[in-house]
Length: 321
Image (tube, rainbow, N blue to C red):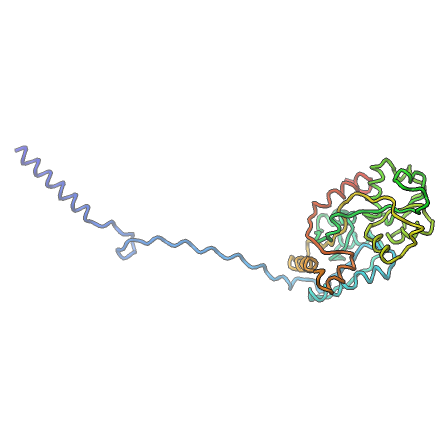
């Protein structure tokens, strides 16, 4: 009896197992009875092309530069070719505002009256503050990354070091100039020669070229200026070397830059930047334009590079926290 029950149970289990192994797995609903194929992943979306914001560009681009050249004709002829190139490349009207004071460029950029300005390092710091961060440094010259100032005096004056300036009459350039005032003052202070107490009468010529002429004429005994202006005046024989010569050159620092407003359309800011970076000294027309600013080429830059200038201005008492 037990054997018959065991055989019957074994037969039932075997039949159930065979039937189960022979069945196909149930297909998901709606697949027509076939196994569901794995779903292909969505193709990655191509990055969106930058939107053309030309429609929001201003009809007129207002350009200016700090008036670090006292000779007005030379100042105007320096920037006229840049205005024409900007007009051609941007396809909008461009106007140059020939300011006569450094501070005018700072105030006008901050108020929206200027769109593109050639600043010295110190005025770029002032403009960034006045605009509450709405200023962007686009490019600078390769030369601006290793800028210098030169101290000049008459060859027979006995002035050979900064210490020799004690009690001497001295001329800076403009009060707002980086290479004609801020950095020369900083190096004098570092040498223990506070212009307020160590020097004789201190004056401001208003421009680098004017400083050279003041020393040459004997109006002051010594002065300091932008080394590129000095080199240009030397090459063009604009002074008498028997009456004025370099006696000391500063260490290098960062100086000039082309700056714009951050609230201008991104496409316009990029177009201006690309224009400067694209100038090639091997191209005769570009070379002539570069020569106007005594540049070999323009390079990219960022705001952090001018932190040293800001610190120097604070140390010299020319900038408050």
